[in-house]
Length: 592
Image 1 (cartoon, rainbow, N blue to C red):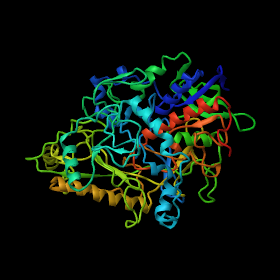
Image 2 (image 1 turned 120 degrees about the horizontal axis):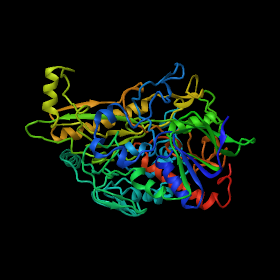
Image 3 (image 1 turned 30 degrees about the horizontal axis):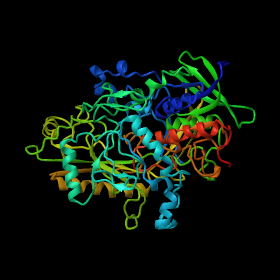
Image 4 (image 1 turned 60 degrees about the vertical axis):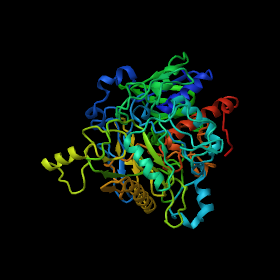
């Protein structure tokens, strides 16, 4: 029997980037807001001070900041005719845990999607014809445009103090920036970070091959910064402990260093951490959410009534909660009906490791940050003619120097023994003179009819609820794309003067043990009509109008860029719609 708490105007499930943005915006509108977060409270000063934040064993190897599979996990299979089994150790992705969510450990690569990404199907069909797309590919337009989101991209970049070089300001192409980006209304708030030696050589070689390299847009501060909420960040120290780690220097944009200090000062905001929401509650009609039920660490069950429910959990948990709560029609890949669980995607990532003459090249890989380096965008999205290549999609690629940490930074040339004296000698000789990019090839993964999320028929979590089941595999389109991009990437290192190059293609089947990114997307997608989407263009549930679902679960397919900038821009877009439209006339913002 759950105990009922006093009602709130808004309950938010999850307090990562999107939950923090939604909480601030709705509390700022005068609403009484509570956030419920499964993981612990995390504070910059006490949880990861510089004295021990740079602990590779604790954070990178033992995954201290992440959800433990024994807390909850998913089941996985490649094909529908296989039996899914529980994931016992995270490999391909790392579900976040705690206040700040993935914003605590992210690299801070802060991208805007291309204008064509938001109208992917229309754009590709118009250029290549419908028959050029694989028959089982289910990509679709988002229901919004780049122009809709531009003000909200801008707002997030200025919240974070993003360091970068604009390439297109109000339609004017700017030398040194990304000429393929959509037009932005103003430059980045901070200049780019200073570039290390390897990235500088990469950019030189790329220019000589005819490309237009530009600095990685970064949420790592290039200089001191005070954001519009009055929160201050310090300059990056290039310590090389960004991804997988919390930043104790206040120099990486996270919810803790940008928005939570302002949010926590609001008297109409409250938080319950270490509390897991188990379902979204509905009234007798099934068309209105009445709040959520959650369980605390003592096993006590509570009901939190609210007029408005915002689902802001990690992608797959958003989908699982919708399915467990009976909201929307579950996707059936055989009948091709339903939407909840549909268009699930990840990304298609690969690397090139290049070996240079140790007598001539010293790259100092330990001088690094999460998003420092030089990139090219000639092969992202539809920035190039796909017609001769037989695939769609693409990705950005770059020499992004994220770390030289000793446990995992052991590049050795092909043919080196896997252990022993010869291996140790090779590690010593190549540590300073090899380049193993942190980004490499960062490719898209488009959606397919047989890649989806549903509820597992066998395995359950500690509350007796079915686990979320992933059915996911790479298709020929993505494997062709990855080989093409990886080969193009390797050509740049050859032009840099590498004496040996090791290409690490992404191969099928999808491997749950090999890390790719934590960018799981889709499953509760946005669209133009209920028949092709779970959410409308404002991320409002078609079925339950007082429920909004934020995060990358809304992406109909996953472009080549990292998703955080778009996730945050969508959160601001949704918050603006609630404030300017929904609160004036609660109900559907778009007729079905």
